[in-house]
Image (cartoon, rainbow, N blue to C red; front, side, top):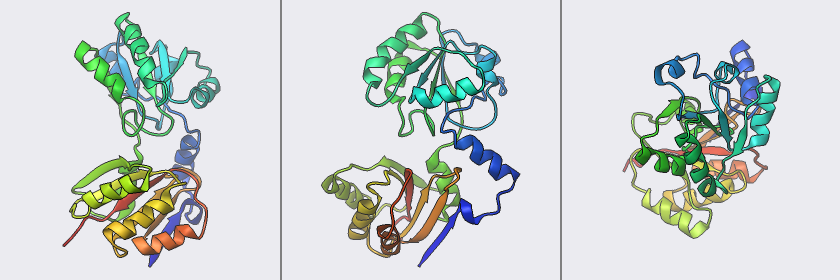
Length: 262
């Protein structure tokens, strides 16, 4: 049995329309100034750790940061241009992260303030950011988190699986052998398991879940949460495998697996 829902099936109230239109930009919005964090911490030499998210661009409109380090400068530049914000942009992503860390550290030590933003989530949570924090913490450079959305928590909140205890595994290995090894290690995990997966590997992941965890294990697959083509599919591992084998998938997925009850 498969239970599904999608944004297209829902009546779009004003909140849904507003949230979807913001999220569809795939770019970060800043709320730090509204929360009074800049006044509390000051800005000189700080890293502002900003999740993509919801409400206001006042933090940058007011000249709050000197430099923006962005996962994809193309996406971030569109948002800045739309709001008439002019700030230097630096690229900071998985392929240049190690090279950019010394540069950002030097700028922070000079007293520059930097906003670190990612395309559609929270820096450091399966997104660039961890290596930069590793370099900053020993230097006692202030790091200010600006909370925002994370697909893992959004999916968990609506999955219908236990939320009192869960384990986040991020992206499993792309190669089937290593992926199955990881799933075998999770076979007896009693907590809800939360994974991220590429749409191109979703069917292969579901095949491995059926093999390693069993065809009747309860699974929830969410896709494009808060966006126009939001989708939630609930069912057994075998039923969802059949569902996604029958069609193409677009957009990164969050996969939740019920914990072992035996």
